[in-house]
Amino acid sequence: MLSIRSSRAEHRRKNMGEKLLEIKNLSVRYTADKVVSRAVNQVNLSIDKGEVLGLVGETGAGKTTTALSILGLLPKYTSTVEGEIIFDGENLKGASEKKLRSIRGSRISMIFQDPMTSLNPVFRVGSQIADVIRFHNRNISHHEINQRVDNILSLVGIPPSRKNEYAHQFSGGMKQRVMIAIAIACNPDLLIADEPTTALDVTIQAQVIKMMRGLQKEMGSSVMLITHDLGIVANFCDKVAIMYAGEIVEYGTLEDVFDKSRPHHPYTNGLFNSIPNITERTKRLTPINGLTPHPSELPDGCKFHPRCPKGSEYCQSGDNPSKYINGTHMIQCHQFDKGGAIL
Image (cartoon, rainbow, N blue to C red):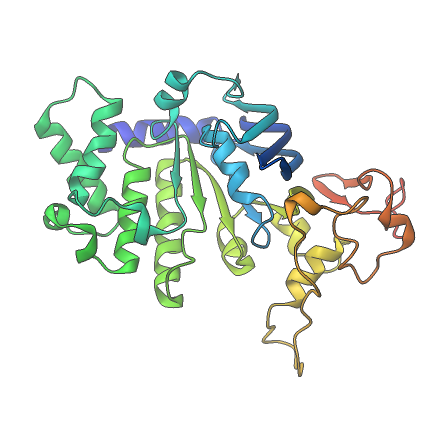
């Protein structure tokens, strides 16, 4: 397994810079009791092979819905998906369930948000990892599966001897490692990590992120990291997308988004102002006023204008703000004119 893993990783490294995933004009609507919720609105994203993208935003921004739409895991009868989801040159939008099942876990895997509830409590953790391997490798022997399970558990820092234990016998951090083991069991091309450290304490968070960074470099996989924590993004990601009310309001390289000397969306500034800075003495942090609007009650014009300190009457009407683009850096905000100058 290790030779196969290393050869696939080497192939990915040679192809770094090529597009693996392109999301074009993605919109997702949920309908329940005749109420329409616009969860994702005209999202455009791309991830290169071997690249790590951080998707950042508050709860309710549409991050998880975006991830689930890639895997085709949205509820069929209450959701409507528009746009294109192009994975390695193939549009997954409208793909058959059989096709999606062959991709899930094999070429695209997801680490779900809560390890406490995502693992099956009545099956041993080794069996849950083995199920993924067996489903995508029909002609593999029982002995080979056991060897792969042992290798994967070792990769994520769990002694193989614990594969016969149940989820309740593991701590929160160890459960998250099991979730990661399940996700990387078939060495996927794209790994979606949905807030993988939210339920963990700070010291365990650091261990898990360090482990994920090492695995990503070893396997050469692309990663979409969904998180609230800009500190994790700074230490792990190559590109950053800031999401608000179902829209990407800022997008760029790590330097584009984290360089304070560059222009930024007011929402991005609000996120950074909410984080303590050890180099500055301040009596109080400056939080973003108000709450994220519900997807069924989105305001007209710029979705951030009710909370924006720089909002004006112009922001409250019309279509979405025009985009300021400078190389790899994109900002969707009315405070920039067509030439890129700040108004």
